[in-house]
Structures are given as C-alpha cells and as structure tokens.
Length: 305
Image (cartoon, rainbow, N blue to C red; front, side, top):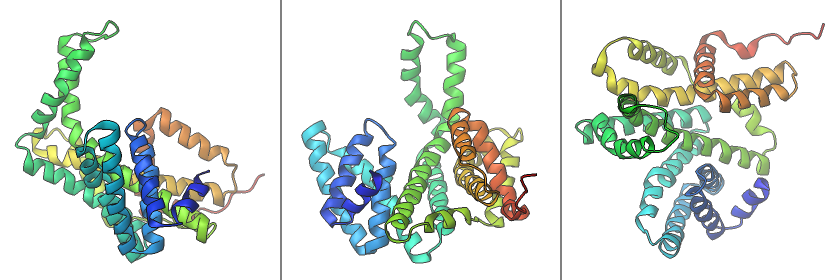
C-alpha cells in the first residue's frame, strides 16, 4: 500500500502535493502521519531535484491552507507545518541529494535541532519558566481528575521537571520527524528505483568519531551536579541521543543480517523500543557511539554449532 502511495506521488507535482496535504491533515489527529508526509517530500525532491521539490512544498502549502480554512477555519496551521515540517525536511532532502550521504543529512538535521535549542534560549529569557507557565494549567486540570494519584507538591515537582526537559524534547521531536522522513523517503526511492539499496545504505551508516566524542562529553557534563549552568547543554543532548539511537539501530540491522539471524530479533528490538523507550534509546545510543571505535558490524559470523 505504501509503495503504491509512493508511485502515485511520483506521477506529478500536484499529486504529490495533494498526498502531503491530506497526510498532514491526518497528522492533526494521528501525528505519525507527518512522517509519511515528510517521506513524500523527500522522495519527490531526491528524484525530481530541489527546484521541483520546492514547487511541491509551495503547492502543498496552498492546498493545505485551503483545507485548513474549509475544515478547521484556522489558516495559521499551514504556517506552522511549513516552518516546523515541510521546509526543514526539504532542506534535509537537499543535503542528502547534494552530498549523497545519509550520514551527512542526519547530522545536518541534528545541527538544526541544536540551532532550535539555541534559538529558544536566545528568544526566551527563561525557557523553563515559559514552559512551566504553559504546562501548569494542564497539570491543574489533570490534578482535578478522580484518578490523579499525586498531591499538589508532587504535581508541582512534575511540572517543574517536565518544564526543564521540554525545550530539548521539542527539538528532539523536530529532529526525529525529519530523520524518519528522510529514512522513509530514501527507502521509497530505493524500492521504486534501486531495490535493496536502502537496506545496504542504512546498515553501513556511520556518523563519525567527532560527533560521538561530542555526545560523550555532553552526557558526562550534563550528568554532573552543575545546576542551571549546563541547562542549555541538557536541552541539546536529546537531539544527539536521537541520531545515535538511529545509529544503534543501524548496527543492530547489520549484525542481524551478517549473523543470518531471523527477523524476529529485529521485531523484538522495535517492540522493546516502544515499550521501554527511554532505556532502549540509551542502550542503542551507547551502541551507536561505541560503534565509531569498535566496529561491531565487522564481527565474524558465528556458527550454528
């Protein structure tokens, strides 16, 4: 079904724009649809070139604006999608098409996430306080529900902790949306025009020692009891964790293939990632970071004896 969708989008600019606009409307109710919308932009841009890709983004903006006015009577939503999704994924697609390097496009996306963090701290005098003011009314509403099990002090502590993480989580979420869109679009391109090419490319992904060292340093620094002096570093760290989680998944895919294991192992990893996301993300990040030196993917194939 998804391959048929990809084939349809390649029939023309307005077909692609229509699919992106409809998927983006669906994403308002079910956010993962935004990954597919991003994948369409990536596919069209990689195949048809950046000029055509930009025309699709413009056409999508026009169609989505019309849908937003007719269905929701809120024209500003189109601008939010344009700034937070369509333009960033187009830029990442341009990097991927220009460099022919999946690693470079993912690192460029990581850089964008860090820029979002830095920009937030430049624009907002106190991002933590801003998020606290935004989250507090929601927390008060939840606290009034019969099933809420925390007292007022505990609720305030939750709000404060969450407020301290929100800038980093927002930037990481933006980066993840772009990265997943890149992977989906690249995989569609391979299925349509180069079968099997994406699997090999993803399994060979290597982000480099420089970024791995930066990630290690930031993990160590943010773990130290330095208080608010490293708040901006703590906000940048989730963005790096996202990209090295993908690096860890790349290693797992490569090892499963080289060791000729059944696909059950990959399914198990993804299920655990959904069920135990924080723990699995940290584990995959560690694997991804260490891969830059230990090259786990070059381990000899084990025997069945």
